[in-house]
Amino acid sequence: MDSAHGLGELIQRLRLYEAPPPSDDGGGDGEDVDERGKVFSSLGLAETAAAAADAPRLERFRPKRAAVLICLFEGDPGELRVILTKRSSNLSTHSGEVSLPGGKAEEGDKDDADTATREAKEEIGLDPSLVTVVALLEPFLSRHLLRVVPVVGILSDKQAFKPKLNANEVETIFDAPLEMFLKDQNRRSEEREWMGEKFLVHFFNFETGNKKFVIWGLTASILIHAASIVYQRPPSFPEQKPKYRIPHYIKGNCTMP
Image 1 (cartoon, rainbow, N blue to C red):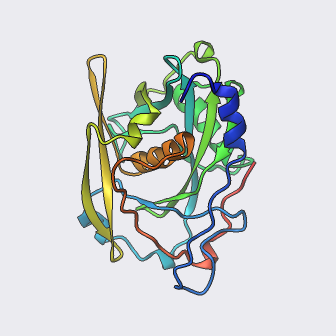
Image 2: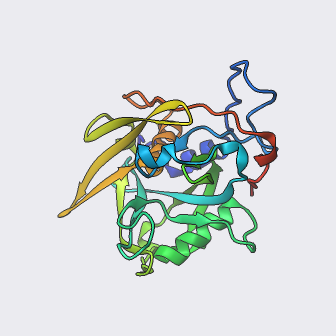
Image 3: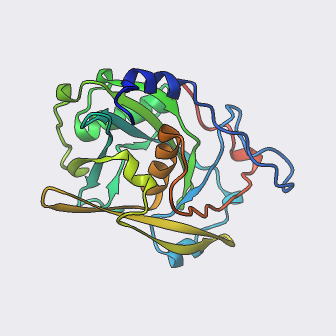
């Protein structure tokens, strides 16, 4: 991001973001959007292809809601960075993996932005009052049929954020340049298949200080999409995303602020 544009202009532009309409592929018997116009844009897998092949068919389930916070701040002049976490090695699922702050919706949450910011406060001590929520992106569907809504927020005053990690959930917190998810550097991919559709799982190697991280799966897919929107250009590598038609009875589970 050119520093001349500043965070203010970015905030205004992202507030105008609207999910694109679904492509007309001539299949199915209706539109692939929920009542709020959000699209199931891709599938993120966090486990092996063998495990994915055993997953039950989508039509039998009603996905649960979740939200993650894509918290952006300005690092070096003109560089946008995103806050990421490495999950605790004590967790029973996806231990030690890199993820965005977030989690499943709870009954008291007003909307997806509330879910994402509440989870960020619980996980890393990020006060919701410091974050300006500017956009909700298209929902992603995880291999476990969890409907994940990416919530984009701007942290204008990074110095005001004093991380306080929940050791039961988060091992460490770090930040990475958002633009790296559009570049072909330090990236590899693997082709996998789920429900008869082939797609690519992307892996980004990132090093900061003396620590090395691998950002992959659903988290990488979400960040590729977010970076494409923020920088208004596609990634410099093929994404190869699957396309699924979502049954009508599982639509409408996602709320907007």
